[in-house]
Image 1 (tube, rainbow, N blue to C red):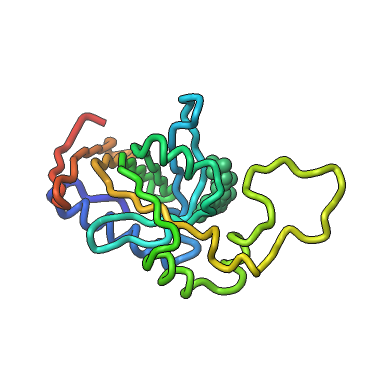
Image 2: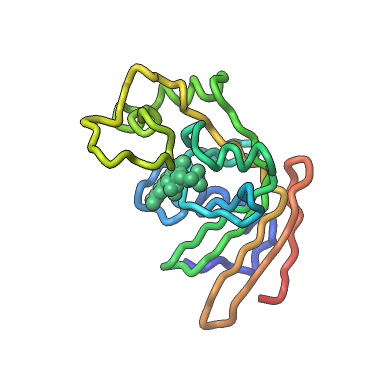
Length: 191
Ligand SMILES: Cc1cc2nc3c(=O)[nH]c(=O)nc-3n(C[C@H](O)[C@H](O)[C@H](O)COP(=O)(O)O)c2cc1C
């Protein structure tokens, strides 16, 4: 269903957040995947697909990653990031600019680690850091469960602004707005 732009921008924002929350529990929801953009060490934009894992009541969005992955260094150097969602059937695009914070070996990581199944944990227990050149010879196994949660980390994103575009045969619609102290103020803009 298309977004009803007769509703207030506040109601639209709230409904979209509910959708994002739903996506964290529904493997088939298109908002489950988003595209996180950082700035790499050469100042180029760097994007990658990630899974939206949680939407916190504060509006923060959580992503899980390997602490050794390049995006962690990129965020340490520049914590201003962007995230993009797209729902192809509903033709809705959501863009956020956000401030990223890295969690590693803290209580949030421990809580989320304990909720992961064995298969989910495997992703963070590779013997070589993500992006490492692989040797010519084949190693038997690149997995070592003895690492436990050593490399599990969470990127917490605090949105600074949000922009929504609804494509429609009846006329495209767009709204933009900013978050301040958790409160969102939106306005309609020309698509
Ligand atoms: C469908 C899909 C989902 C992915 N989800 C994640 C994720 O949740 N976290 C993550 O770190 N990488 C995820 N990846 C891998 C990233 O896109 C990326 O290749 C990897 O994290 C290395 O990124 P970096 O070198 O920029 O740090 C996913 C890839 C795909 C195709």
